[in-house]
Image (spheres, rainbow over the protein chains, first blue to last red):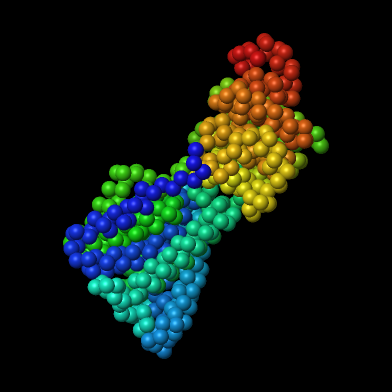
Length: 327
Length: 241
């Protein structure tokens, strides 16, 4: 018996997909550009999806309203960054960061606070009732979207990248946007922090155990509902952060953006295995890469391609790439 | 009341539309090992889960150390000093043996903070726990998982240990380890409530016994008295010890 066995096969899917796309794309430089764009998109989706997968894993809660926190985070960022035009207009990266970091922190705080209320008043009354969860959380998202329209208006709002984050770097012949590299770095930091928390702290241990068998965690004397509320709030904050990054990635925001991204994050957590953080990362990277490759090669089938990807993965591993034991 | 740790008075439990327990009366004396016997479907596991608050009692009263715990949530009940090993063992398969033990040690934030003397004692009872310390618990054999489940329940001192069918599917050598472990725990003053189907196991360990049938306790008394009375065994359990 080996002490720790890493299931490497799902990890290999990401480079395999990238290599498989190379001959179809043809040009090496275009392939590098698309791959970095796909990884950046994947990292942003991972930030958004990682909280949702733990929420489902811990309490079997199907939160179709997760998208509202994405939109909320993005709209809060438009207000914060709009008020800091002197800082975002500077060509110096550190001055841009002085504006972007507080925008992210405030967006996360607002999304966390709204997440706390969302859990208390919308999710808690329907614990254990999946159909009602789907209906009421979707209703919550619709109400959230309408409230965003009341505060910020119904129209698209521009969220331009700060000056210092615009432009591209040249990697050989390939042009790689600076912001996409920043998104990859932020995504890796969030992933590293999550993995550290889950593997090195007692709270993380409780979350991993709760995802597998919450009844046994309670029998050991821990209040899993409190843990769930904490995870829900952190998941909402991460969705808010993801919303800021998604908005900057798209350079505009609309009140419906949460619903648009919702489809992708559900594909990601299903591919990853419900409740699996590592699986969510693999799923997000696959979805990000697939969206960019097919967006370039065959734009009309871009969304379908991710659904096809999900079907293919589920045919291989019906519980997702990293199924959680006991579920 | 000091010699009684746990009492159930007229406890009823419903699971959905099913009425499983029909007024269970049970007394678990402090410092003794009580066996809960009965045929399949008699309500033994439901009784344990009702004590733990996993299936709430719909009627009746459960007292632990004199306090009414009937309406309390599972974490509160466990926090009072009750350790529970379910029939499926409740092992966290994706976690290592060490992580399973650390979870049960509520006072410890890391494995280094677990009471090392107690840990060494557990290792002496169940060497497999030490041998596979850093291995995923899901890879253990059935017997090793049962050892881990019991080890986890005793990693910190508890007032009452509740175990559902500890000998189920175990090899005779491991059963002997298990019996030794329960005897040592009893000698330390721990009260134990065991559900068992293995009657020779029950006879070797039990001080007192309660026999259930159709959701009620139909016999309660000394284990030895039941072991000595073949006619009573036949009428209660349909076989003899």
